[in-house]
Image (tube, rainbow, N blue to C red; front, side, top):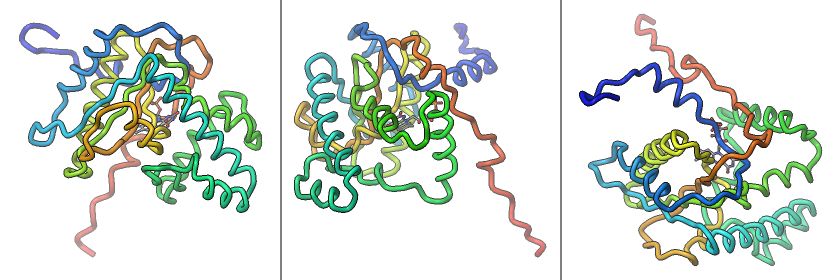
Length: 251
Ligand SMILES: Cc1cc2nc3c(=O)[nH]c(=O)nc-3n(C[C@H](O)[C@H](O)[C@H](O)COP(=O)(O)O)c2cc1C
């Protein structure tokens, strides 16, 4: 961009399209200043009456490690219960540990309007990784990587103000996208993580966060490794799939 604010939009499109979720990170630490820079870039997004109805908790070092450990142990409890059928689920309920404490929506199955898209990316990702459809252990292992934040040294937890409902979530999404593109421009990788939104209580134990906010998702941040998983390119649907036809008013 030059001093007059002129820019090449074509360059932006190819830059934005070149961002992909990173699912394997190097342990290389990310300097605090870089984290602050990408958060500042996030804050250049539009916002509902400029209210910025969200907070972002930065988990690194011991906090990050404790949360990862806690998530992994809870996931282990869920996994075991899932393997044991109905009886296991009841046992898990009794044990409580592992069951979502927030955002149950994350573990609900998808509506039929959306299911095929989710199934497609899941199938293509597992094929890319050489994981067989019926290899539950490998699939669980892959999902568990979410709770290691895919090895990223930093995990951000994005909370939205409850009073603004979907508008707060929309603002947080705009913030998140700017943040992710800023990270991408600096050679950092990111992955949004709805998977960590199920245990808000664990995150609250580590940070002072007002009850007026609720957890939306996590975002892991770090330097991408050379792992094959980072070569995966999720398919992109075309505009026609989201543009409804006009109503025929002559009928
Ligand atoms: C709010 C949100 C939550 C997500 N949660 C997860 C997650 O828990 N685990 C994961 O591996 N990917 C997660 N993703 C990443 C999506 O699967 C990914 O963005 C999508 O497949 C498109 O791929 P791309 O980001 O590489 O373009 C999430 C994305 C968003 C926007």
